[in-house]
Image (cartoon, rainbow, N blue to C red; front, side, top):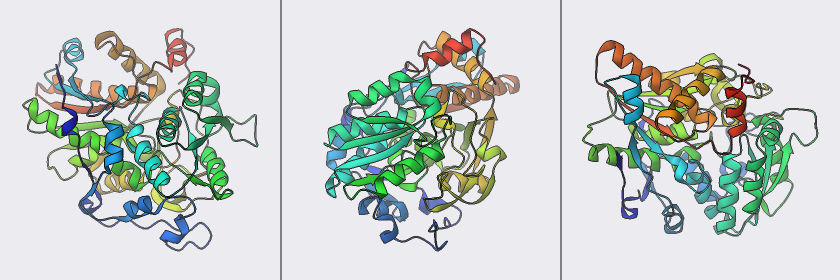
Length: 415
């Protein structure tokens, strides 16, 4: 069963969670002075429209018409009930998922790549630099850049660059220039923090270039809230008052924020973040100010972190290999409004394969983390004999991650 909305039902505003947080977010700090950053500090990297969205306390922010025109190429995305998985588990739970894999890039990432490219183009920027882990974000920004006539330079974490060659091909097909990171350490497996440092250096050194980030920052999570807003409308069409739990995998927090933030004001709705045990930021990190990158070039953010020099193992879920988390997500976990759980790599692939053999689609390794939590929640409902409505974000497909499945299916996948 699926629930589709017509293009006319695409949300025309983004949902801003900042007015709904228990307390104000602590401000980012300048890396040199350790004082709160201002708009002028961020202007060399970001357009003013995004800087304004970063600190806005307006409950909603209008989506530009030019952005809506692009998003309508694939949005609204369908809400689907995973009845075959329900039957396989024998659970009374009802499992629904937002299928973000239907975007041209195969994930949720274009939801923010498109507005970021639009605002940079409107400010006269000619070129964007960015980092990418598994390649989902880099793919999305290359796609958005070609729509708005921008050049795009992508620094891809070297472990993923080697594991996922077809992600590079996809980015190059959309006009991107992709290089492995760190650029100065060819034997280093890389990390998202190091790739961010490479991309920020690039942008800071050229007047025609801005930096673009695919997760963590407030404006990125803001753009992703089209997911949760659509889901609310679709759940109502499915006859559901509200979900009991909303689940998303979490690296920096963008797809998790997209599905969950519109539900923050709703009492009785649990929010669950799922991360890898090899990079357990929320479940094993400390809440403190830390740099978003390895070299210490970015502002310090108040977040759960494993330390900006942490280099996680080269797991296949490259999008979850980040030492920190979005300040918004960190604040929700710290206040108790959101829960967090971590799983080892093998368990997430077991869940992903079960999904593929029941529902038919092949999820991204990152999405497999969310599916593992969904299965656990559904089995808990079975044990308790209670009906439960589970909503999760199917954040991307795994058709360019088949080497990971090959490793798992042939017992070559380390935990």
